[in-house]
Image 1 (cartoon, rainbow over the protein chains, first blue to last red):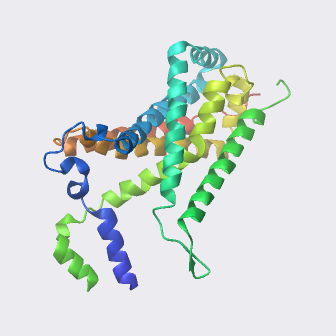
Image 2 (cartoon, helix red, strand yellow):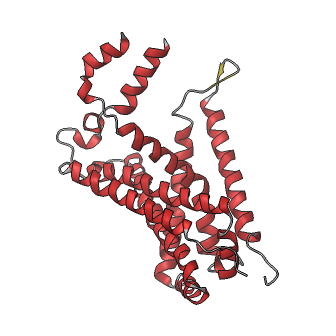
Image 3 (cartoon, chains in turn orange, blue):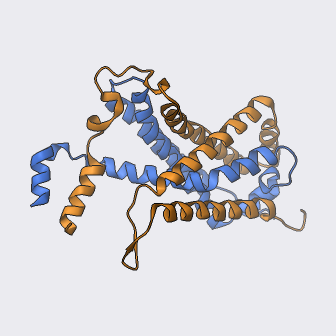
Length: 154
Length: 133
């Protein structure tokens, strides 16, 4: 396949209007189609994860914004996070974030075709690399949050 | 030749030039959230609130940590790209739930919210205080 052909295929696959391929456009598709089997239900749960991640991001921005307003405002916000409704939200957000990570990183191996030293990199290798990256990123967050920000007073 | 054939097959007007832009940001947001969000939620919001001494539970430590330019870039990327990721997924999630009308309006609300949220994230991160004295 020439480069031009590869490029046009890329455009065709990525840039086609969603009006043409989205499931919801299938004629006669009922709104409860995703309850037909567990794979569809898992797909819908995975998509829902983005809602929890977005709300969690907005909550994180609120917490960061309070750093400007002083210690008392920040500590009050942090103390509120220990209440039951917030605890339930955090447990849900964590569960959905895990589901998002696992499904997204598995999908990472299915998407691109990579070549290394003239040989095609297998789907398993790409997925393993993605999970290794997840482990390294998680370790960085762990170290930053456990040991970061320490000073003479802490 | 192939491109001309593709255009003849699909019609030039069918090639959505904006979609790859949003899809790229969507993938970046999905990737960064997949890599970093679970551990941050676990430590900051679950273990931290359970008494584990993480940096975000203490104002002084959180402030010192957030003074680091790398941490600021990370926080901006994580929050803004997560919002864009949400916008792109939620736009189609609504269709999956059977809402097939008002697509342009739904897309405007989703991407508009993500853009506004990203601008707010930039404002907040840029105005974070420096190290406490």
